[in-house]
Length: 289
Image 1 (spheres, helix red, strand yellow):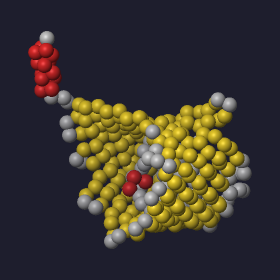
Image 2: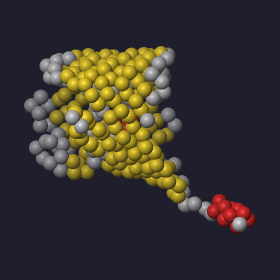
Image 3: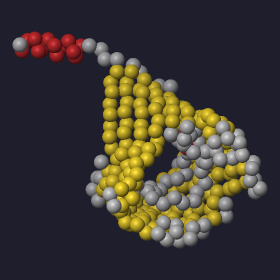
Image 4: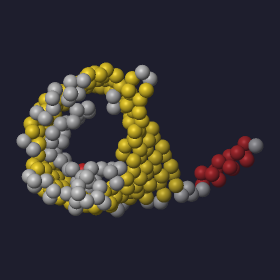
């Protein structure tokens, strides 16, 4: 019996396997106190999520899929589950191709945002076309990375539905800084050009990101936005700040994080947005698994 078992094991080990599959499950749970732009305050779970990543190696290629499930707690034992970032793809020596809800060609390689913000949305220049319904190719040549995206038949909310969006981006090094340039062609609305610069100086990271958006259907015809941000990291602590000017609307963003072990983080954030009725606040504990 032992010889038979050993023979089976040797035969199994000697067989060539065409594919190797892998599944990873992770996520986080967040509970805290939050005040929104209208002055309403809540205490409870916010932003908790589950992430599923599956991959399979076939020859020199790796096929993969990803889906994120967001969990919102409405209180009294009720809540909602929503999906986000659903995509499939393949990668190899040629680069990587993704299809689905994923960063477009502009977002995939842009730089200029260096802070570890978690909860509060604040003004900054950047890509505008969104991450839905995309077909994106990513590649790299030495220190230069690039991406090209195509979103077929997307209704961007303009006068004509069903227009396509093309997006491209490139990022490289310029001395101590990383520099990115992106372009989005939204046939129904206009076009968007994005420039980002970021760099690290010891424990301090700084970044600038700006965009110029030509809107063919707006009376103003042009929107300009720029955001400055910086982060200081020392040991278990991170402190960050962001200042934005979006269409003549100013924002001030402050944040602090402290790691309480390898999986748990205390987070406090504050946002003063000229366009909002009230200041926004978030104080929470986040545990990853």
